[in-house]
Image (cartoon, helix red, strand yellow):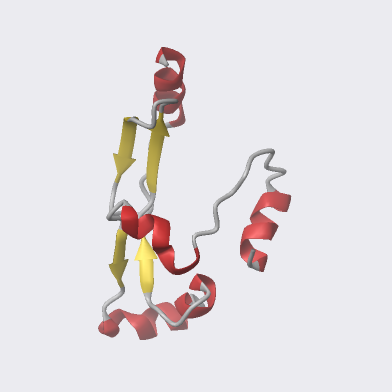
Length: 101
């Protein structure tokens, strides 16, 4: 597991498993990956975002943030996806959905 995943676990004292999706293989299965256009790569580099290093490979692929709740039968019962990485599902909405399960 790369250092950034481990530090996230330690910093936030997470008590659950964290998926490190090297090469975005899982995200690609969900259709959540896009490749950063070449024109934007220098901008990301100037901001200190070394995507190939972060990805653990030589790609400029970025996963979109997504939230899924999958029931015990393997059925997706809730999903939230937004290409704008600053937008996330509301925790209260997730908790309410989990209480329905």
